[in-house]
Image (cartoon, rainbow, N blue to C red):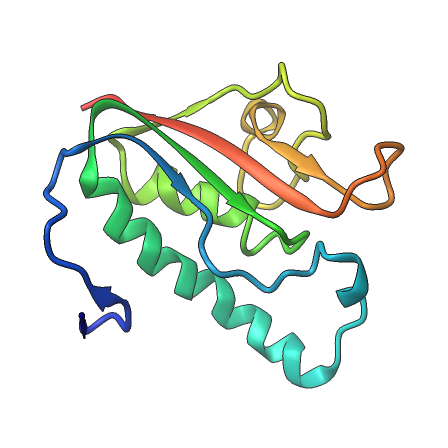
Length: 147
């Protein structure tokens, strides 16, 4: 497959409004993985680029989703730029997407003051390796395309 202008491979055969469900787990900084809990200055600069790169995947995935379809956004990082702030990006840039509550799942709510309202923070799930649940760090948000 050729590479499109946004740097992603141009894969033929996927049509707008053709998916009932999408699990979007784009490449991330992987800061939730236990062996990678130390950051050097070079990778700190790269963290700023990770969310922008993920937004390319978001921009390509949402048009593929049918009205009524659901998308789960997930990362294996604790970086708020890649988590809460990308949820904010989706809600702002794609008014057709509605955040769905994942409060029935274990984990912590989203972090405050990172672009989401208090209610929206309660709807996403954040897993932190320092919490009482023995897990690596990762993040989940659920959406439904409403129009």
